[in-house]
Length: 226
Image 1 (cartoon, rainbow, N blue to C red):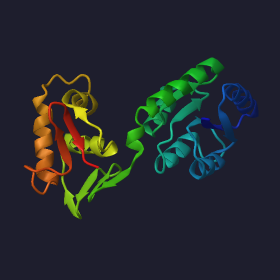
Image 2: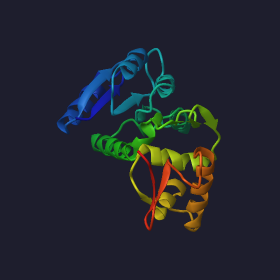
Image 3: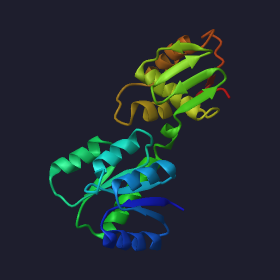
């Protein structure tokens, strides 16, 4: 069951949203001010937070910023104002979406589903640190250590290694790697993947000619050895 934290100082809004979302099968928790919201957000696991901008004590913007220092839980900002500044600030401080009051409950439900779908597709990125067979990759500071030796990788080399280590044993075709690392809009050819794999091996393998980490599956693609 998906768990959502509702943060608003208006009891009527909390009551209405709580009823509507519980009807759809969500588990709902609530907070009426910024300090309570921050405490609950940091002490509990939520799938999404609906966070009002105008709150007693800490503002919603401050709460959002504080949460983002510790967690990447999806956040939708709620604001009674229509000014672009509130929307921009909310997104700049790490919100995933925003809605302006008054809002339709059906729209709230649709936004929640949309944000949950978007963030679910990024779940592998939630693994901040992965360690396999002497290689430690840290997504937080984008660092790589191989057998206690720091290794400097380019952006694409890091993204490739992170993808491989997030799914050890899974074979990726060159097309898979182009799509997931370079994106659907990339217009280059498949040799780009081979070049980056070769350079990555030169940096992490003791003998790049006899790799033990990134293995070639002949006629298919590449995989990270478990």
